[in-house]
Image (tube, rainbow, N blue to C red; front, side, top):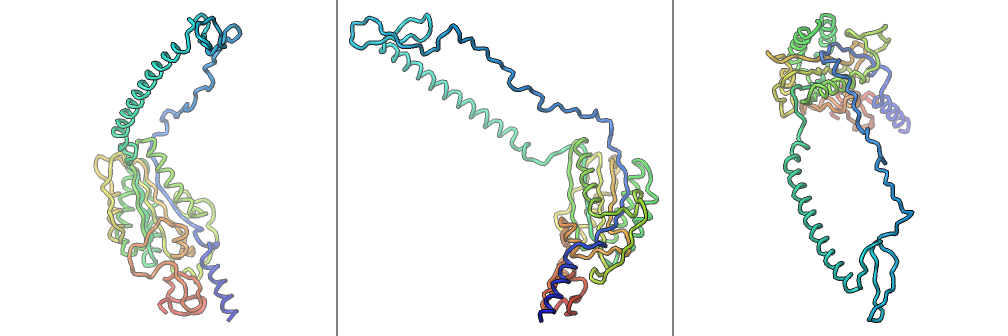
Length: 355
């Protein structure tokens, strides 16, 4: 019994942790037409010099405003006179108290007025700018990402077709338009095998749209270690062998597109049909320039398999599209080992997944 538990723990570690063949390969192609000469953006934020107001207080020949009390001749016992500043007229305690009372009323009144003006201005600012401050940014450009994970029924065909499309990708805006159209058609028709998906969209001005596009594309390309397909492939592909514990594997394909113009709204639900609809919103439209395009997929090699357990770890943003329950992480009810549900049975003890 102890040996069985030990074996289960070892298999759990092998299946649940990233291995050498997991997410090793990937491919991509695309281009960007964002303006590169946008003025350099030499922002001089925070250039103000602190401590500039040098207060030169000449205190060598002047007394403070609360000068020392001077005892002057008076008809009343204990009557004192205070000289507020050099050259000021001396006042009795009664006169000083009357003046201080009047000054206090003025201070209270001015303070109330100042607070009232501040409240009015603050309220107006909240009303006028509050909604814009918390609303989603808008602009003439839109950047959208649609990522879909396809299962073993379409994985190999998609990998081969994407490799061929990368070799035929054209230059400039016409190439991006045609590349978008072909990729959308290919992936939308393959959504019968879609198991996971995620999509997001952003509207912004050109400078922010370019930054958003680069961030999304770079993050997706960082999910694999070797660029083995597409225009950016470099060097020989690493040797790898598919493992039985990974099954037939899935492939994640992402389209990142930037338009000068706005796209159709994204669907509000998650399903294979919604994934196809989200992809079709990326079909180029007349009068709207395809400013940038990136097609990114992983794995790119037949022997580099990606199980659903590994997919959920490397792509945590992807959500399951249906309730079929035949993908994802599961624990064996007999030996407690963890394995991808699509295997159908526990690789540690052979118990059926539905047992």
